[in-house]
Image (tube, rainbow, N blue to C red):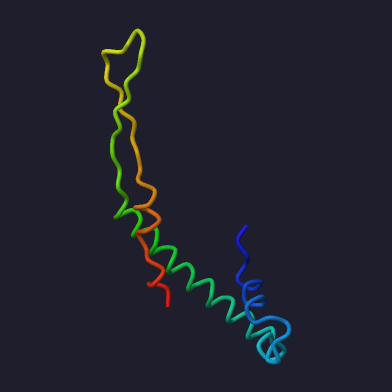
Length: 93
């Protein structure tokens, strides 16, 4: 499971940081957490859109032995790398 925004914020700043008490005021933490969630939503939406536009699909011929060997069989394929590389990390700033 992926860490929640508030947990990520706490782990990133760290309890040993001198500014921890100031940063983790309840209102500030709530506002920062909401902003982090909205930021993540924007990038997830953009990444999914990019993946849907850049995905590479194909057909793979499969030869079957037996009674129906004269009937060609094709299986749909998806190039996983085309999805994983559709939205570069450099877009997240």
